[in-house]
Image 1 (cartoon, one colour):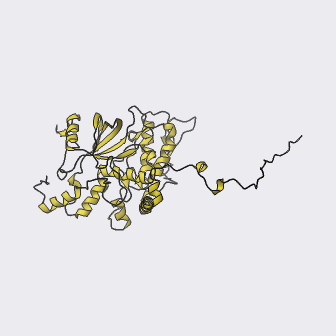
Image 2 (tube, rainbow, N blue to C red):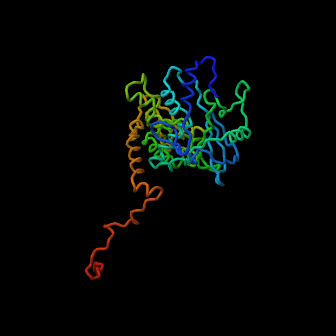
Image 3 (cartoon, rainbow, N blue to C red):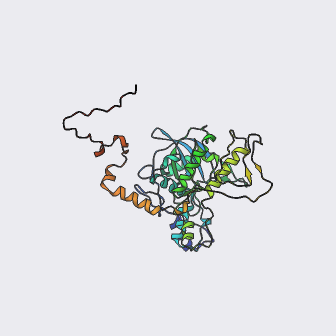
Length: 371
């Protein structure tokens, strides 16, 4: 189906149609742009799915508990990109870049793709790839989904094809299933969560949406709003062609992390958490004799202190991908693909060969005991 909009010219409709399309076939990694990509869950992106239960529904996606080949997974189904935020005057390449970087499905593909290419996928709830629903599966999930109404009484359905997306299949991300009732995080391990977030930032990913609900068992599970380098706003700013700085920076995630801690304390979470990334003179930690909450200082200008936090914008993503491609292309890389490296103690090398004794048995020297 073609885009139908009386306010849109035929030329603009064709441009948008080209921008929203994506390649399909065997072993197609998405998105089709520079930077990290996510592999399909099955070679052609399609797989048999047993729908168990709908878990929740958000503004950009729903999450289902599904069974595939007898194994439970969390399947996150993303809605379609809306053409309202595309500039009709922009070239097709610019429209496509905006979709690849700002659509929630592609944001998750790029973030998980980066974590996998650098071997950090265990820091978050594991992703197993993407799926594309068949028309029959799309019909099934529509029939099984519970309905919600907007303020005008109309049914809300984020999976319903929108203008410009009528030929696209529903897209989903297959994630590890985490049992319901699992705690979001252990407040006693808040420093470990913070270090994990710092590591994620160090490989060019700004999560941008840090809150308690986005953790399951102490691991991040949501990358709907993530910026993964290269990101078009950052690239334009670094080249000096952007009219303003990017709306996020290296302070974004540590600030959101601190806000999550504040919400935990304000909502009566126990034990209270006193750790902060951004230290300010506006607040102080009370001693044992003081109040059991943070109190605002009466005077003084807040002083922001943030030390040792990496700058995601400076991540060299080209060097990472070049090294990965080189490893994959080498005979050793192909032969050892999927083989876990041995520990140092299991390796056999010259340093482990026994010293030549020329037929004599070496005896261990012992010190005489002192009487």
